[in-house]
Image (cartoon, rainbow, N blue to C red; front, side, top):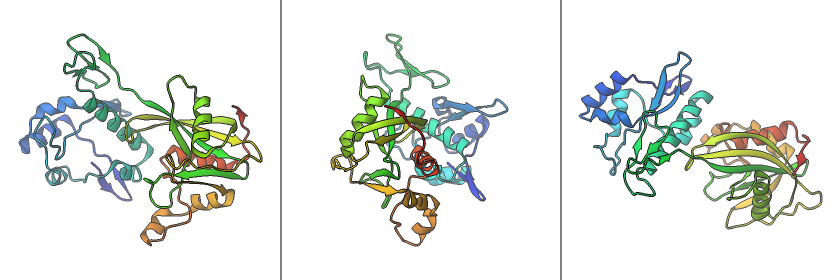
Length: 295
C-alpha cells in the first residue's frame, strides 16, 4: 500500500485506532491485527508493525477484504513489491523487505514439522512456538552468493529467461550444505559459465525477499588470463557474455524508464539501483582494476 507524494511514493503509516476503525467499517474482525509483525521503529522509538490484510485471498482464515474498498478508505493504491521498490527511499525499501519476508514466513509455518499441531506466533512475530512440545521456530534466510566475474577490461553478465527483455546481471546461486562462500563462488561460476575463478573479494550483503527470504552475499571475482571462453549452461541461463567497460558504463548512465516509454529495447539493461547486483556492477565500473584477494 503506497500513497503518492510528489515526486515519489510513501509507505503510509496507520495507528492502531485507525486500523480498528477501518476494519470495523468494512465489517472485518479487528482480531486480525494480532497477526501483525514488528519490522522496526521510528527515530522517536515508535514501534512499526506490518499486517497482511489478505486481499481477495480465498485461503485466508478471515473473510477477505476487497482491494477497491481498501484503496479508497486508505487513500492509496496497492502495488507489486518489485515495482514499489523503484519508487521508494532506502529506508522504506528495507521496511517493506522485512515485512514481506516475515509475513511470508509466518504464512508458510502454520504447523509444527514434528507434531503436526498448529504453531503460535509471539507478539513481535520474531518466532513461532508449538504448544504441544515447546519447539521454537525462528525465521531463516537462505544464503546466496552473487558474483561479478571480470578479466580486467571486461565483466561477465548473464540473464535468465524470466528477466525483463535486455536485462543482464551478475551470476548468483544458493550455498549448498557444507560449503564455504568461496567454494560456492567457484562452483557456481564453473557450473553456469565453465570458468575457473582465480581470485575473489567480498563486497557487501543485502536481504532479498524474492521469492523467499535470502541473504545476498556479493563478491567480485577474476578469472585466469587466457581462460575466458564461456560455456553457457542452458539449463541455468538463457545467455551470458563479456561486456566492455564502456558498454557497462553506458548502460549505467542510460535512463531505462525513458527508453521503455519509447518502446526501445537498449542493447544492455542492468538491474535496478536497489539491487545489490547494481552496486557490484557500479563498483567495477568505478574501479575495474580494484585489488582482489586470493580465493
